[in-house]
Figure 1 (cartoon, rainbow, N blue to C red):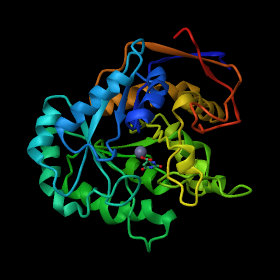
Figure 2 (tube, protein in one colour):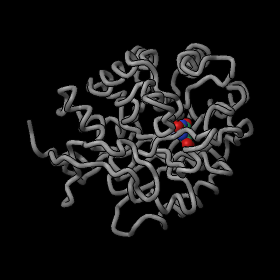
Figure 3 (cartoon, rainbow, N blue to C red):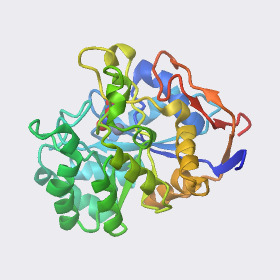
Length: 343
Ligand code: DOR
Ligand code: ZN
């Protein structure tokens, strides 16, 4: 068993950095671990235009401590009225790295999302033509569909038809939670990839109900049964380049989590890398960690891998109950890896 692990510096291919005071609190946690991050656009109001993304990128850069070398990669929030010309200009000028599909009302701040994929056909054609990745929150929004079936239903009702209509569209199925999602990624050719969060590798749906209602484990898509968690662990540690790191770190204040209608989201940024390392170690796959954290994502996004390195040391660390007033994932637990301060 190695006591030190040196990896190519990783990137986070899915994170919520928020804005204002929350951005100030959380950005350094991501920037300390990751050189680049795909930043979600579900602000209030959402980041729907190139100009808005450019301004948001500046706010992120100013909030980030000067000594951290961090590049935010911006995404466009698709709506029924997204202008393909603005999207194309934003992508070609390097402001946008990708565009995000939130089915309307699927999750936090998604009310302005897409009501019907048909309405954005022109946008999708444009993205296919210019090679702009589409990032998908893949859940049905019909409230009569069981919440645990929404991802699998989305695959059959929307994702398969979409991939047929746009065979060259580059798609990332975000934060997958089911074995059905693993299956469609592995059985589709190169254009479809998926991100996997630390929390979906660690917890199944029981975590939300262990001895009471535990809102700190509530996120969307919601964690599923154990067999799905095991399928995700196999996929993440398989070495298949179509699976890569995306934390979906999604901070909410304690007041908005611990209430009668708590927000969805798990704040895992402070120890995300250690959390993934623990999973890979448990699966006997530490030799595949670097692919998942640092190589597969850049390959899909057609970006160079980072030229810096980071080192993890085998040191037990107790995760605090609160980090900057927010409850972090693994609060009160011991993780057996720690980022070395000299990286
Ligand atoms: O748990 C989640 N939180 N899932 C999402 O899709 C959105 C995110 C957020 O923005 O809070
Ligand atoms: Zn997210």
